[in-house]
Length: 326
Ligand code: UDP
Ligand code: MG
Image 1 (cartoon, rainbow, N blue to C red):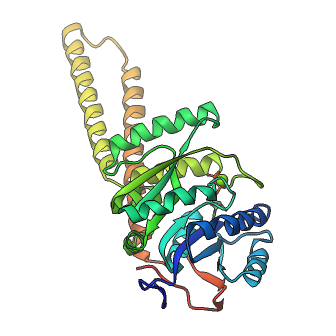
Image 2 (spheres, rainbow, N blue to C red):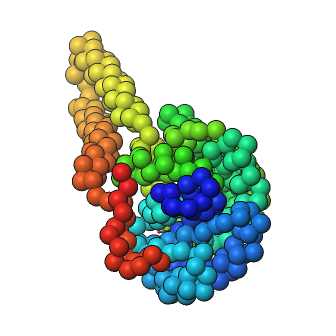
C-alpha cells in the first residue's frame, strides 16, 4: 500500500479516494475544488478517482484529468461493482499516510478536509463527517431515525445516523479495513468494527451539485438489510423465538378447542381453526426460511471468494493485473 519515497514510507501525505459512477456532470467542478482545497490541507497529495463502470463519459474525463495533472490518478473497474467495491479499489491503491474517502457529487464538501485531516495528528485514526439532516425529506429522516434505533439494538457495533462514507483514515485503519476479506461489505459496519479512536466533525447537508442520485428505494432497502444481516446472527435467533411463541399460542388454542369440544360437545365445524393454523404456520415457516436463506446466500457468496472488483484500466497503465484484497 505504501509507496517508495516520503518521510515515513508513504508516497504522499494525503490520498483522496472518490468513487465515480456516471459523474460526468460533477467531475469538472470536483476536480477544480479539490485542486484549490487540497494544497492547503497537505503538502503532497494524490486524488484517486475510481470509475465504477460508468456508462457516460466519466472514464474519458478521468483520462483527460490525469493527463492534465498527474496528481489525479484514476482506476477503472471492469463493470459497475457498486460504491462499496469502488471505495475499496481506491483504498487498495492509496499511497498516502492519510486517506480520505468522499463522494464525487460534492455532497461531501472538500473544504471540510481542512478540519478533518489535522485531527489525525491528535491521535485519531478515523475522522468521520456527520451530516445534519435538516434539508432531507421528513419521511426519509423519520425512516432513517427508526432504522438506526432498530439496528443499534440488533447488531454488535454501534452505527450513527448521518455518518456516512465521508471520512479520513490513518494508513493503519486503511490496512485494517483491507484485511477484512468478506464479500458482503457493509462498510458503515466495517468502519465501526475496526474500531480505532474516532473523531466526529459536523457539517451542513448539501444537495447534489449535478446529475442525480444513484440510489433507488430498493437499493436503500437492500442496504438496510445488509446492515442487519452482515453484523450478527440475532435475526436467526429471533426467528426461532418467534416460531416458538407462535407454536405455544397454537398449542394453547388447540387445547382450548379440545376442552370446549369435550365439555360442550363438538359444536363448530372447525373451519376457522384450520384456516388460522394453515396461514399462521405458513407465515412463520416462510419467515424462518427467508432468514435462513439470507445467511445461506451470504455463506455461498463468501465461499466463492471472488475478488470484490476487477480493474480494466488505471492511470498506472492499462492491463495491470487486478488486485485482490486479502
Ligand atoms: N457510486 C458508485 N457506484 C455506484 C453508485 C454510486 O461509485 O454504483 C458513487 C457516486 O458516483 C457518488 C457516490 O457513490 O460519488 C454516492 O452516490 P450518490 O450521490 O448517488 O448517493 P447519495 O449521495 O444519494 O447517497
Ligand atoms: Mg450523493
